[in-house]
Length: 335
Image (cartoon, rainbow, N blue to C red; front, top):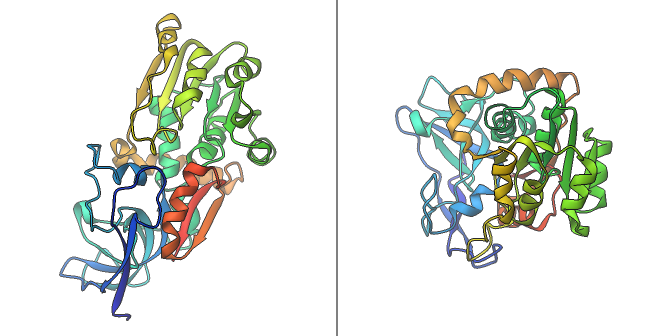
């Protein structure tokens, strides 16, 4: 057993993208599991946009990461020592591991989910993890997807967006339109993931293109971006259209809040609804979503792609990829 636990701590709150001053690599003793705990060797880190919001000194649904604290993050690890009958040596587990090589699993809020034997850990961290849960409950509970809906998804080539579009088709949407940056990503959405159309936001004209692709209006818009793209979707809502607010990556690196969408009044005209959510609200219902997703995976109707960055010290660069558009699919750091 190694004696040293390398970990990345928050050294300074970032302004915009992370740089060399944001994180500090530290060495600490590998923690000893107490009674009721297990020692977990971290194998994969889940890189999610919300990590960037936790680095700000601002209130949110979880407290900010403190200066000098290990960066908070979900991930998958292997149990290497256990003093808890719930965890056996060799088990793969998913939970809040942080940007470090070793973490402790316990009970309650410190507990981790044991993965079924034989399950692909990359699928577990992606479509069967928080990413897939966000897509499923955002569509079904918040967006109230019904058969025949025209669905539009922003950041559609990212982890959540790519899953949203495929799930929407599998659950009965009549037309799914993705918004992504660049011709390669747009081709990926249509050719690989089965989207009916893709709009390249990098060439502008988003509102006009949305009208062309959804002339009768958008029944369900799943927003991961905010800003101009949200405004364009609001301008194209169908009667009783729904807007799901999942994320706002266009604003996470901004020093000041963005202006509110000027087209919000269309919610009145179209009798629409706009609602935000946090996936933790549905934590006790994850098995329900997984029961829907597992057969789709087995049938090949739901694909997952991972952008893997190697090594703990690459975690900051990996997080920046989410905001620079440098990834396709789920960003994962492999330790």
